[in-house]
Amino acid sequence: MTEQPEPKMLRITLVKSAIGYSEKHKATVKALGFHRLHQTVELPDTPSVRGMLLKVNHLVKIEEVK
Image (tube, rainbow, N blue to C red):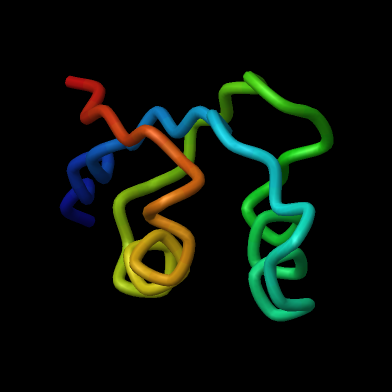
């Protein structure tokens, strides 16, 4: 069997609160794994994660991890 290369990872930091934004934005922030402000999570670079990040790009800071 051939090994699949590990997917690229994204380091995402919540830099602005979701208070005052729609319930969909709050649910997206929670689905990304955030619990508090300035928390950082690492997630695989997949189309579904990219779609969620596009929705809340004004609340997060995104960095690529090698």
